[in-house]
Image 1 (spheres, rainbow, N blue to C red):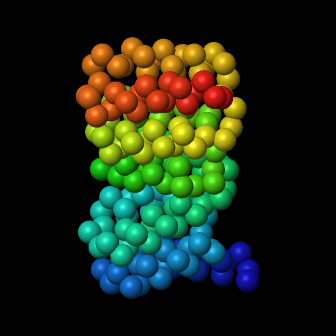
Image 2: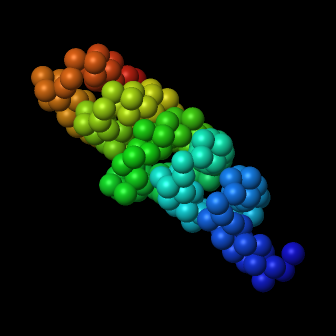
Amino acid sequence: MTDKAKKALHDKLVSELQSSDSKIVTKSINQLREEGQLEDIVILFDLLVKSTDEEVKNTILKFLADIKDKNADLIFIEAILNDQYKSIQKELAGICWQSSIDFAKHVSVFTDLLIKSDFETAFEAFTVIENFTGKIESDIKIEEQDKLKDAIPNAPEEIKGMIHECIHILDQF
């Protein structure tokens, strides 16, 4: 397939994501697995925020969890930090622990989520930290543990246990 034909197919798939027919949207999402580009992740985030169709949402979430490109970590982190995606923050954090991408170098984002979020989002952030496979530098680990310790007195009761456990988990890295 020529570059021009690939671009035309990609443009067609991206435009079909705007369809009101959920079957067309799901088909396009699945085709993006083969023909998509890293930048398409943001389009899927936008669609996830706008969509009310559960099948479309589930298809997007499965697609995002299957992403293997190590460069996608920054796209996910930027979205988690972006207020525009606040309504899907829990889902984005969930994808981060389901993914094979290592988010250890973004530990501060997840400790902040654990401290500042509602229980469900905090739990997803905790699970991301629990699943880190990469090494965390000693000074960063100490900084994050101190941040967590400082948060304990003001944390909601249902989150305090996770914060304590997270402090211990960070000791392992």
